[in-house]
Length: 237
Ligand SMILES: Nc1ncnc2c1ncn2[C@@H]1O[C@H](COP(=O)(O)OP(=O)(O)O)[C@@H](O)[C@H]1O
Ligand SMILES: [Mg+2]
Image (cartoon, rainbow, N blue to C red; front, side, top):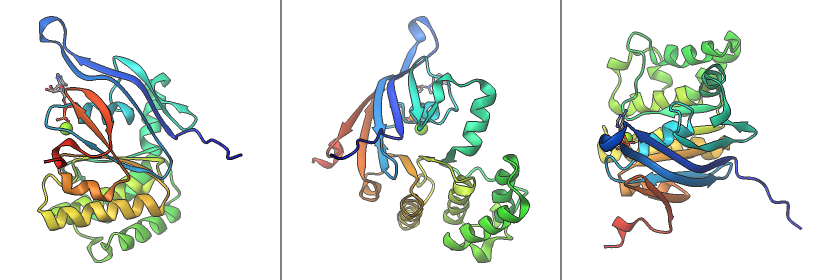
């Protein structure tokens, strides 16, 4: 008999409404989703469909109106503010649409900074930065400030920063939106490779169907309603 393993990420009945009364917006309308350890999934949907709201709740950045999120042994939606801060710093890696690097810190220092937030010993942090920058093809860019890097290089630094504290979950929000196609592909390819080789679980928000091929499964969200799809509807034409 094979042992059944619980999925690492468990999202149940997750709902978020903004505002009240006749101006109320249902951004996420009762989402259910499970993702296994080591899986890299895509979250597709048009602008305004609820993608950012959904992954923000999953990553503990935004409190849901109702519903639950569990990651491993952690019940994300039951945590206090203080616990959430720690959770985001240690168990989740975020990569946003624009890299959001600290402008006055070099590539290397941007990575070291997030390690310092969780008290990683300096020696370990330095070794890890060197290894990550090497893997990301940024060894010779380590001393550059963000403004001295290309858009693709900045996104690679952001991926390194997201992986720095060895999170369980990597959440990526439209990483290729500001990049040309070739650059976008190489960034997503790298992301896939890092997630797979490190046994992370990843969710990537995108509205670029070409990026789906790098993922294991696809979810679609339309007007806040999440569904798991065999094939994204926009590919059926
Ligand atoms: N802070 C907010 N206050 C009010 N409405 C919001 C807020 N954030 C998002 N929304 C609304 O919620 C819906 C989903 O937004 P969002 O999650 O950003 O979608 P997506 O990332 O798919 O573009 C949209 O109608 C958006 O206008
Ligand atoms: Mg968004």
